[in-house]
Length: 274
Image (tube, rainbow, N blue to C red):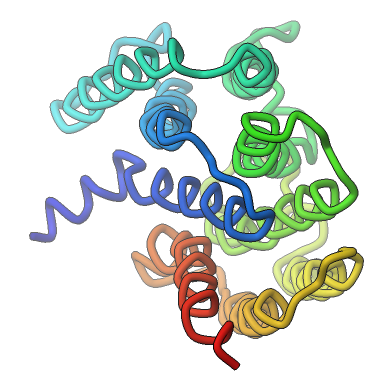
């Protein structure tokens, strides 16, 4: 069971579920019906893209991996990419155009397109911004344009809030990886230290929650859910430390989007009766 669970995490299945859960959060929050094909595309595409970024930069020519374990993940990822590619035929043209930009950003993040064989990930401070941008675009913009085609004020607020959420969730990972990241990356903890990074994360959490009240169609369910989520984010940032337990970031922190979805589903079912 331990090996299966580790493969579930290492093969990015957990993070893909987190991304898809945020897509459904967008659907529930903005009251839109997201096509099933888009859910399938995002789930399997996230696995393939995440594993490419995670392991591709370490592999020879981004293809050849050394260990048998990573080869299994690679084969699994290729299978997921084939499934997501098939779903492309059922998506609208405007979604495909938006996908092109998101894939391009992901490619710039991982591929050595800059002089001296560097990628955008190696540029100071850009790492978490690019990840947050791609997550926000994938979980808000794609489902919205698949149905509405118009980016309203509430959609902009939701996109910014999603961007902030990802920045906050990345803080524990940035602190955890401080021992392994190259000094050249100049990550936030490398620049300002662990304590200051946590303070910044707390500040981002306050912004995340405050933005909720900028929406024009605010309802009690979203306020209650965001309040609970706000407390959870504060708790996670507070408990984050350099030497973390094995699954603190890779499972528990990455479960926050899933928890948001669960809270919203419960709220839609029970709080609406109040």
